[in-house]
Amino acid sequence: MTRNDTLHTSPRLDDAALDLLFRNARTHNDWLDAPVPEAPLREAVELTKMGPTSANTSPLRLVFVQSQAAKEKLKAALAPGNVDKTMSAPVTAILGHDREFYELLPRLFPHADAKAWFVGNKAFADDTAYKNGTLQVAYFILALRALGLDAGPMTGFDADKVDSEFFPGGKIRSNVLVNIGYGDASKLFPRSPRLAFDEIARFA
Image: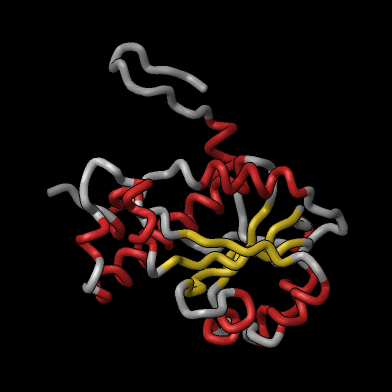
């Protein structure tokens, strides 16, 4: 980590860290035959929860699927192209968002009556849960990479089937699946192109 003392900025990650998180990181579909310990999964959640969400809503809810029985339940909800890579992954995380996150706001955001912003306004609550839950999915993927794990995020699944098995009751809605393990780099295909800066951004 380096620091630009001239500008008095916060510390900047060095190139090795940026390579790990972004430039050299890949989505993996093939996995080495190596188990993933529980400790880094717990640590990834602890890191993820520190990322900002609006009014500290923190709607992410997560299930780590590891057992064969749980994998079989998940398999029934997967798009055909996602079956093999998911069944062979040591762990699959189901990331969802709590649509009643506001019930915890008196504890998470105690300096304002934030719960009142959402009670009786289901559309606003659902939109807030989805946006901030998705933001936390991104934090989670970066946390996995930072801890030396590889990730294979995907959205090709039947959310209703997943929810009935893993988030019953309708309060939590699944959003993204992330396969987790140690990726087999020999099976990677060349990185797909990315858009140029000017195709993505402009200054106003």
